[in-house]
Image (cartoon, rainbow, N blue to C red; front, side):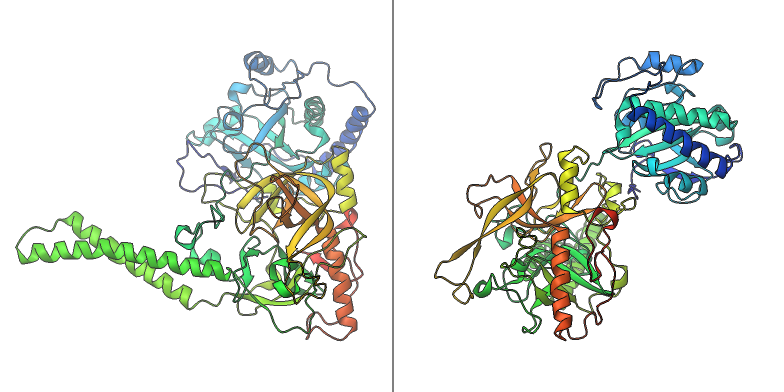
Length: 620
């Protein structure tokens, strides 16, 4: 789990976590003893909680509202100083207790007071662990993390020193305790303050029994907070003309090699634009994935694209955005050239009339000349770019239904070898936007997920039972990175345009396709829609980065009687299962032109949380 840190912020505004050894640190407890003791104690603690057993009588229990007031901190802090009772601090704003991190404190064992705690600290120094701050790969932590009780609820655990960056460590550290920090998932049972308190007290007692009574224990909850603005959005207004378009990414982002998920794609020679869902692996081969309706022609909108069809080239970015890039660059060059020529004329006039041409004017002229050269080089790169993503290998069409209800709506793209240089390294993870002030949810990197995609039925059960918080994210071609709320699977009718060449043509210009799909609403605390046109094909994942499905429709003028705030998502499990069936049929017929020869046995990456495929189809 990686959390991007701004390198440009001053230290008092953007504190960082540092990996540092310190000689004054007490030796780490024996791995076997801590592992065994924590495991057995945690099991008995959770068992007691589940059976309605008593909680710590001296614990300061707080209300369930994580945004509650900080009143009473002084009394709690005073009690903690004396170590008379377990110190449980109210949930505090991230800026005051965990500066710069998306953590909310749930409970704290008796040790240092709040005044000496992280609330006043400008950084936390990592003790004794050499790996990434968020990875529990130390021997002790790994053993604890593998325990079935803890492993099902936590995201990270590690040892820290509380300290200020501008204070001499040798003089400062002896007065500050080592803190064992446990970060739990938002859907964990441990998020209950009383449960977190019991765990904090239990862990502290374990450390004390091992002779490390000065180790504080903090239980904190990670709150996923996505981008506040759609920085990857290509079109602020989907009805805007080419001249109003402005790129939000650099050329390398849009035209570079190995495009990441969420990129703009479109069929060569068409005006259509959609989103690259991601990558799937089939018997060692890697393919791109998007919607069928995004690459199908109007004349055969409902029909599957067979392997034997003429190659259908898919480009990234889409032809529409390639054109807009050129128009935008040409306009920028024209504007910059005007400034440059104006200064050149002033320079020539000054030289002719023996007038001064100031250093500021010279610097400005040099800047504009450089800017024109850079823009000209960029335009040349766009003109000479090879935007091919690959060719459509085959697609689902819109006739079939999986499990009698879901229209899969997928297309496989055989990747262009020249565009992709590291296909074996492709992964479906959200990129980190470290250059921005917002923080991409670290858990979206899928480090701590047990699977790569959800089982449709099991996820529905979790939602119904309140075991999944329903938060989902996506990166789309049009609206960029957005957050939404996942609801139940529902039946929806989607209207597609079709031409006279369709095998099901009845003379109508539209055809209605009924399917089941996940319903996603816009997040109430976010401006804008979760998805609009152009976002078809975007992958939808939860806060752990586990795929929920792929966007196929949004509830605007194309969906009769459906509120505009709804987006519809075909479950990823149903898509992958249908791909397995179609791909197996292709192999049985001896087609595929060398793609993924041999049927290979295996299963998808869903593990215990999803169905397996006879063919090894993986969401990477």
